[in-house]
Image (spheres, rainbow, N blue to C red):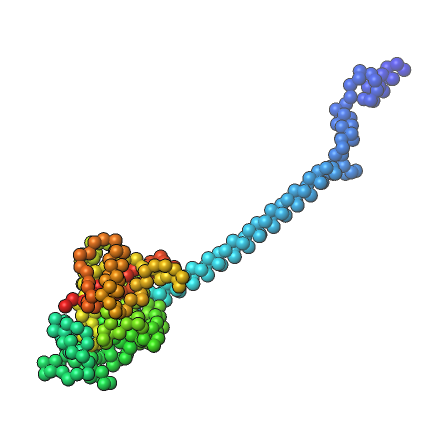
Length: 349
């Protein structure tokens, strides 16, 4: 009997006997006591804490995805905006240079219309007012017949007949040798700025066409002829006037040729300076109001003012009785602020 009982105890690992627990029983107990122990099939189930962490993780991922979507939408919008700006800029740039090329072609064709074979010697016509200084309307001599022609009752230089017949607003041709200033000049006193954005053919043009101020009289002519022209980015029109800021440039471009339809004229530069279009209540030098001088003092004051504003010394000057031309254009960076650059020249005898 004793031996049998001992054998029974050995078969029951949970008995006190030696105190050892069978490994399988220990593993089963640990599994039963574990908080992660699962259902009857032995699969583990997540705790409440881990379920909360996993929900927070999913929310965080959804928020990141939403931010990425919003960022992508903003990037797409910016891309579209930049593409639109690029395309519009490209179109405007193309139109600008296309118009520039067309304008240069037009000016070239107008230049070809000048009858240089009929051009009189400038020295033979010391004043602008008809044949060799003769007042328009007076009979011309035999030697002068070939230089002038009558168009619509107006006696004009034969060399400019074709240009005048093409457009009756044409008043003369301005040239500064070695520059891009080789241009027709218009005169419409009843509508001074008619050619501000209009070409010779009467079509819209950003570059416009140089024109004489309404207060001047090219036929008489007045003491000062003010000619306005644009400063274009492509270097056309009056852009080269800004080069007169350099004294060295002036040395090689001292002379200006300005013919009106009434007579030829050579001029020498006496001043180049920055100007300003002033408001009504502003104090300052209004170069653009000087057309005529009733007294020597008035003329001398104008000459003194322009020379005082020149940034380098020019020996040539003018005195009462001389005829002047004043060329005016916008500064590169200050057109909207009324900043101008001005070149003044006196007519040579």
